Length: 173
Image 1 (cartoon, rainbow, N blue to C red):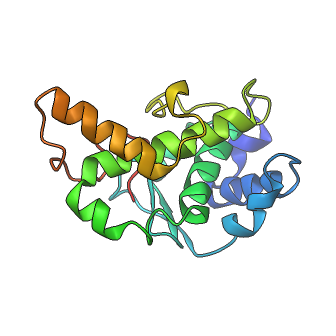
Image 2 (cartoon, rainbow, N blue to C red):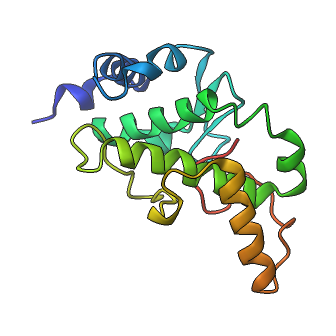
């Protein structure tokens, strides 16, 4: 027997997660952010993305997600918007596209994990596990980026490489 969740359209699932976030004591402060901008479904992206206002979800990515997993993804995108990741750091993102995407995701995912460490309200998506490292809990985007640049250079890599459109992260921005 299928659940009500499985019978809901993908747009209705996203709206349900917005309402859930608005009613959750730990995440309600983000409720205004989740309602800002347009929500679009588009298979041209792999997972999800935001431009700092609008959010795009790949239907094939979100369709199998549980309600708790979709809440995580909605919160993930909302935190990118709330922290102005897509607008304040454009110059850094142009110079270090892959590392910026990773640094932003470490900060966003760490914030969600610290807020709900026992996964009472959210769960991690499993098809693309979120970048998560307790080392970065409480760090700012710039602090994480500086650390990732240092690690990349120490290992002989090019910190300016990559596209920033996912690169092993949960989403693109």
